[in-house]
Length: 408
Image (cartoon, rainbow, N blue to C red; front, side):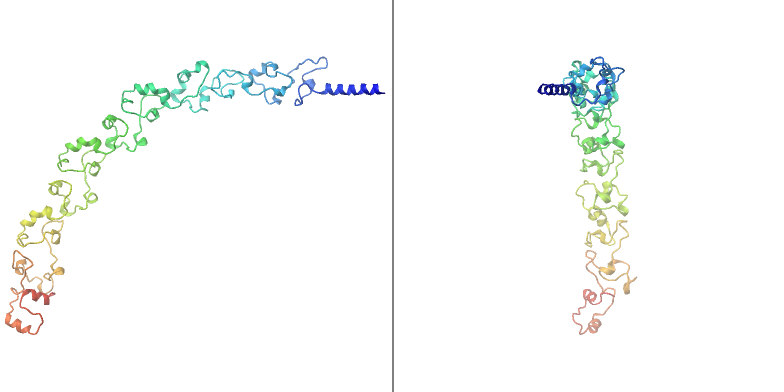
């Protein structure tokens, strides 16, 4: 009885051992897909095994590869699916481990270099699409594609150094080639002054030879007008800018359209707007001694008119030199003096049309503060004394007459 039990246990253990798959416990396909009853020899008939059911579909050249190339043991799940696990990295880690970025299972040759570059830091455009890889990738002959700079100067330093019109080195040009060049071709070069600087080129500045402004280089160039137009300033004679001590802020009178004609807005540029007869006056008539520190007092320009006036004689009468009291900017004559509101009513009231010349009341030609009432009003002092008897402050003179009768 014991002997029979031992035989049964041995058979059961044998069956359990035979039932365990040498391919591991992750293979779920039936044995007859690869094996047949006649022989346990591996044989797949009519492509009965579908590799697409795995994590790695067989495409291109992989269809004809011997299974053992990838499956080195009977546990098929041990096989790696990354390219680098089967294929030696000929690029020595300079292109990454994602072989599929450049290669396919159909061929190891690379045919879409331009498309590959579009995924990189430096897409190929314009002339770069026709450039030989070896011109930029110096180690390509060793199948190495080491990371390299993507700035223009990394490849075009020779062109930068060789440029003579203008000389990039002498002119201290920046090495950002894209400021003037593009990928369609190194020439012709064009710099967008309006977009890349604070000094847009328009009107008279448009089309000017670069060297006229950049004779000392292309960096830290002054945008002040006189830095380029000093010769124009010095040569101008109508009026002479140097002699007149003109400001060197050219924009006050000139525009970018042309140096001449020049216009100066006296109203906005000074505290003395030109009105009336001043509008047509020549600049030099007021600015004979220069254009800075000019007095705005009328007499500074009209002293000759003041001295020449005879009716009344301003100088002899010691008139004040505040010309605007009687004159306007329209013309020196006729003049008007507001006698009625400031002193004594001579244009209205009882004195209206009763006088002809100022001298009828102002008897002193040298002092118009002196006036006389008694010359016109033939008052007898005796009768006036009697009439004003008892009047406080009465004195028989013109000053007292005005003090008591100011509004007659």
